[in-house]
Length: 636
Image (cartoon, rainbow, N blue to C red; front, side, top):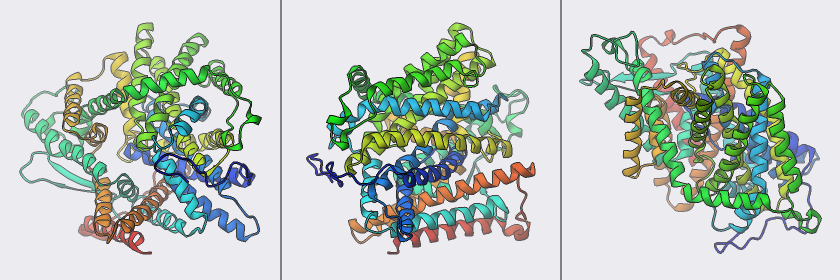
């Protein structure tokens, strides 16, 4: 499809016109998007990160179309591409929603399903439409310079799978194994979900692990380096910071700010993390996000300049262009953006706490930040991929700017906090969707797809998945509660702290400053600052399975007899790991729906049947999961 010199030869030539934008492709992609969007929402609320689902959705689409072909309904590779384009959109919608809106639930300002859906649709629409004028520059002219890793990999998967659908096997197995493991520890609760051991001689020192199939799969997808960096941040918190606070404050006779009642001597390691380390981690993540943006300033400036130039250009007549170079006409882009902004201003349900005049100001902030960060995200993911897209850093920057404006206007009450957060939500979704859109357009460019059909597909994907993603978020909150041990919603908690810090000066700035210092030191030492900061911010038990998944990938690749086999193992493992993420996430949402109907979280049979051996049973189950993962990856 391409060569090192950047010459482009699409898989399907522009002169041919195979079936592409069909009902089968649209319906299949929408259904897969709903499934993986809900799963990614669950994962993000539990672990604070999401993963790209383009490749597993592409593989599942090919498998589905092979089945339909046997039933007498033949399909083309371009139909499969449209299906994965629509399906992959949901994960980006989920990222923007779970990074922000759970904070409203924590403030007891429960948003309605209509409000959440309107915000998701507005942000998604802006993300797609703002990115379209950049396609010819970033995807076409920069071909061979910007790799767009997920987009390129997805194209290769579709081409390879076009000859046979057996590659979907590992995704299906992963879905089943992930769901079964979640059923054991989260459904019937027959095995423990987490284990921990105290470190002798280290006051309050403790290390533990969640027994999570999804986090294990995420670790394999991210790889050994990121997993090691993240667990390093977690170990810093659990084995250095928490013991240091316990040692320094253990003899205090009065509570230490920001805690108002409890003494440090009486706190568990988890309570010390919640009262103190969380703020250190918040400072580290915020600083790391800003560092990531600062490093991207040259890209940001160039992207903004090009974006402004492209938006000011007049569109060409679509009918004079080859099929593979036709976008949604520029006038419709302008109309679409205008309608999205008008919706935010006119419909009171979007910014529900603001009056009409205030909604105008909020919408202007949305449009400015969304345009800026869409151009940034579209180029950044071309270099580092969707999974490494610093959406949280962009959201933090948007929240800092919005909160500062609101502070100057005197909007510091609950309405101001909620409005600032909803502005950040729309921007986060726009930036996340822009990254996904650019990856999908890269896939289409390599395959020879029609860009405007993919762009329509992105908009359909947003419309079809937004309601279900938001509904899953509401169900999860009513079942577990955000900020709980089951669903800590770490990114949304961070955004909540940022807004409160600016509007109410409610942050313990000394602790935040320590976190800033940690992020700066990580940068100086050459570590990925955002990955390390997330490790500091999240409990170490969340990071350990991520590290173990990355370690498994390292061992599997190192023991491969040659590079081709190492690459095959990496690819097969990514598909199985994606299935684990989807399986656990889907069953987690299903358990939440059942619990919502019952009015309580499922109790299950409990771990009493195992007696004192319960921790070892859980460990044995996790080891069995690792052995299954090994087997599914190495077998041919």
